[in-house]
Amino acid sequence: MSEHIKKHMLDHIIEKADACVACGLCLNHCPTYQLHQTEAESPRGRIALARGVVSNKIELTKNNIKHLDSCLVCGTCEKVCPANVHYTELIDEVREIIFEKGYVSRIDQFFNWLVSQKKRL
View 1 (cartoon, rainbow, N blue to C red):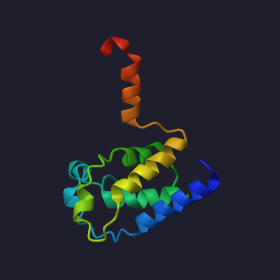
View 2: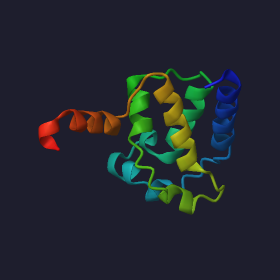
View 3: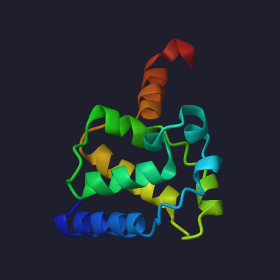
View 4: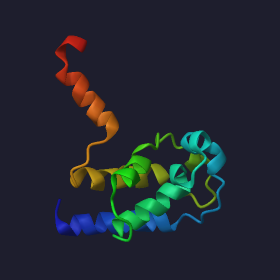
């Protein structure tokens, strides 16, 4: 990916993240927030984390990646968002950036393992 395209993508992620007004209406609709009851496992928490990671204000650690990776991308938060934040697009774009840095998601690791185990297929 060229530096110009990458810069444009990072700016695009920040623009989407900045649309979030942090009202919290998404919290009651997010399955991972309902399960864990932590801000990092909520849409607005992940938005803040994504903004920090792409702007290099937050370090991309395994723990931060875990929070970004645990989103189900179900879109229920988008349906109730009064600011019309395109959350699923934002998460997909952040995951692409993370993948380019060498991280492979847990689901991809699982499928890679499954495919490598010919007996299981």
